[in-house]
Image (tube, rainbow, N blue to C red; front, side):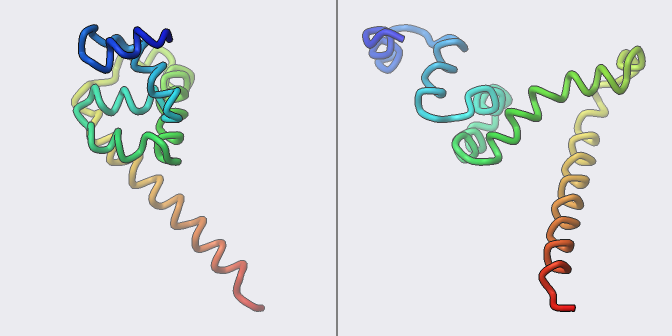
Length: 115
């Protein structure tokens, strides 16, 4: 991105598009796709909190791989999905991840105990 373009964006003299936002975020070392998706979804605080950490990296990979896995797993049944199921599904995924993390912690503790 040219220096003048960046200055015009920063001054608000030029509207920022998604491509420009991605370039600025990437230049700052942020996970640009995850940060933009969170911001566009109204989760600006989480976008700022997670943009440089492993959670941002996790979401970047998750958002990239989810459509492929949905298509592969559901196939033609993807047409049966209902938008109203999204919130419950996200809760289910969060609980599954929490259990997965707990299982790892339990295994690590068990392995470190003397026998």
